[in-house]
Length: 196
Ligand SMILES: [Fe+2]
Image (cartoon, rainbow, N blue to C red; front, side, top):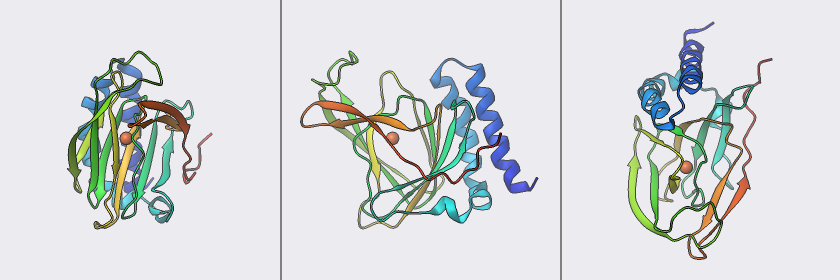
């Protein structure tokens, strides 16, 4: 095993242990944020060219690791200038670390109570956060963390690592003006070979 994969496998092992041992999402992100901070420095060594794959149509989600039981996933996201997510939530805890560029997060605050309904959702725009290289951020569900992230057209490419407490194959997207949300399936590039 190389030194570089040791950094990644150590991080994954710790994340799996934390995920197994804690029921509170806030405790998971509290425990793993410092590890993401350390992983950023090791990222250039363990990420391969396939993890930096970009897509001119949409920000690229390149899978780095997925737990066999879908309890954990790690992606390298590549954001070209002008690429943004829709307004969304996650349905999971997550820890994000920026390894290149500046990732912009535009937050939304939910004014209406969350009764699990997909309509009559009142969102207002909240603050903006600029996450430069080395920055770590995190979120927990219930109440959901609602935001859009991306890179404005005038800024260069950004690359970020995203660890989630499940396989992130779907999430809620919001139509802010209509006050509705819907669950969407999201694709990723299967750049990680699942170990049997
Ligand atoms: Fe997000």
